[in-house]
Amino acid sequence: MIKKQKAAKLLNKKQKQKTKTKNKMKKYTKENETLVAVLSYLIIGIILYFADDIYSKSAYIKFHTKQALNAIIITIALSFILSIFDAITLNTIHPIITLISVIAFLGIIAAYITGIYYAANRKKKKLPVIGRFADIYLRF
Image (cartoon, rainbow, N blue to C red; front, top):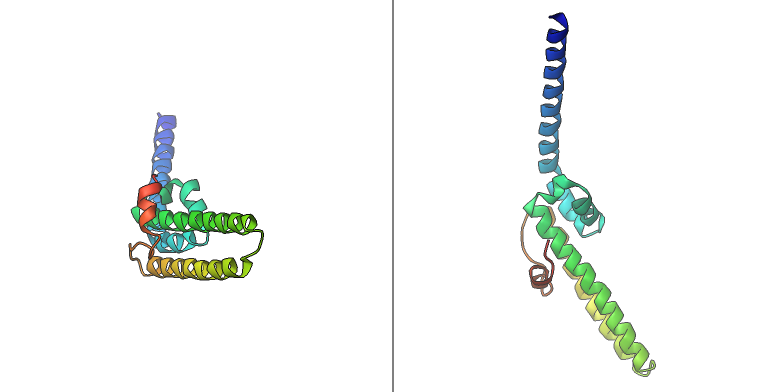
C-alpha cells in the first residue's frame, strides 16, 4: 500500500515537471520568436528553424526563414551567373560586369537590411523585388 502511494506521488511529480517544462518551452518560443526571425537573415535562424521543432511551428519564423533563404539562393545564383558570364567574355568587359555585380549586391544587401528591420519590428512584409519568389519556389 505504501509503495503504491509513493509510486503515485512520484508519478505526480514527474507529470508536474513535464507540464512546467512544456510551459517554459512555450514561453521561450514566444519571447525569442523575433530574435530567431532576425537571425534567419544571418543563416543561424535558418539552422534553428530546421533543427528545432519548436521554431518550425511558428508561422512568423517560417515566413522570415523563407525570405532569408530566398535571398541567400538568389545571391549565390547571381554570383554564379556573373562569374560564368565574366569567364565567357574572357574578361574583355570585366569593368562592366564588376559594376553590374556591385550594383546587384548593394541591392541584395539593402534587401537583407530591410528583412532584418521587418523581422525586428514583427512585420510580415516580403523583401523588396526578390521577396515574391519565396512563396513561388520555396515549399516547406
